[in-house]
Amino acid sequence: MIDRKDLLELISVPFKLEGLKPRFIRVSSAHISGISYNNIREEGLELLKEILSSGLRITVPTTINPGFCELEEQDCDKETYKKQLEIIETFKKLGAKPTLSCIPYLLGNIPKKGDHIAWAESNAVLYTNSVIGAWSNKESGLTALASAILGITSFYGVHLEEGRVPKVKVNFNFELSDEVDAGLAGFVLGKIVKDSIPFVSNSFKNRYDLIEFLASVGTSGVIPLVVIEGITPISVSKDYLNQIQSLSIGGEEINKAKSSLENLKSEEDAILMGCPHLSLKEVEDLLKLNRKRDKDIFVFVPKEVKAVAEKKYSKELKDKNIKLVSDSCILWGGIVSRNYRKVVTNSVKGAYYLRNVLKVEVGIRRKSEIMDV
Ligand code: F3S
Image 1 (cartoon, protein in one colour):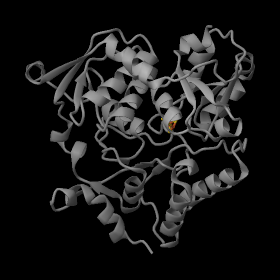
Image 2 (cartoon, rainbow, N blue to C red; image 1 turned 180 degrees about the vertical axis):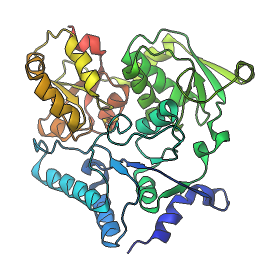
Image 3 (cartoon, rainbow, N blue to C red; image 1 turned 120 degrees about the horizontal axis):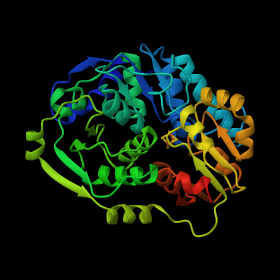
């Protein structure tokens, strides 16, 4: 039996570690990660069922991350599919909206500037803090669920004004010409700033590159916020920026990061895009590029995007061998069931996890390289 007191204990841990009295703040929404059966396995599912049978229910609008299988296609092994479905059903009974996407900030759960929220999924936390100006620490799947039930979160970190002040300025000494450059820059930045909130100039060509940058920051680092000049609704004076520590990231660091992430030794079995999930606009942008290879490209999207895109662009998708996959993370059961061992992706975050979690060989290629060979 799990009760509200247990959940309160759980979200109080940051204060207990410091020997401080816990303080809380109300949240207007939650987003929960760690819903893939490949990730939480039997122990995670049992815990969710125990929370459900204890009578606890979600009390604020709450969405959930993608799982491990595409539900309609049933594209993972039977047992995993059954378990994945059980996880999603349990979340539904608890009161979550089964969005199964990692871009809730564009579709399904859009916070407003100044909202205090309890979100897990690092790319979503970084986007809402850095672009929308909502306030969330980087929660775990479990603390986000606890907050979704309690309607409150621990009042520390970036929920406080002082936690949102940049402490280090990071300059990019090279052009962020596309999503891979942006992703690699984010990956290096996440590592070098440790737990200091950084300030960066807006060097991104478009929203997609910015999302890839923030997703990579969340992959290599612990910070929940990057203050981006002209984007993040936090004002920082020039005088202040001249006083704080300044770091630079150059082409050499970027090339090193790319080599450390790649281990593809021969031609790939599959191409994967959509980590984080692509919006409809990004799918449309992809369809504008030439396509000369005959290998399938699996593109991960929210189910709403798949429904619209398949209706509107069925010929274009077919001509370009693009298969839209919904409900699933790029760490996808279809890779295992199809026995793909070598993959290419344009996502730095995707490359990191595909190599380290699914243990496949990975190559990083730019969208333009994938689509215009
Ligand atoms: Fe989304 Fe999975 Fe990437 S949750 S951000 S597709 S690792």
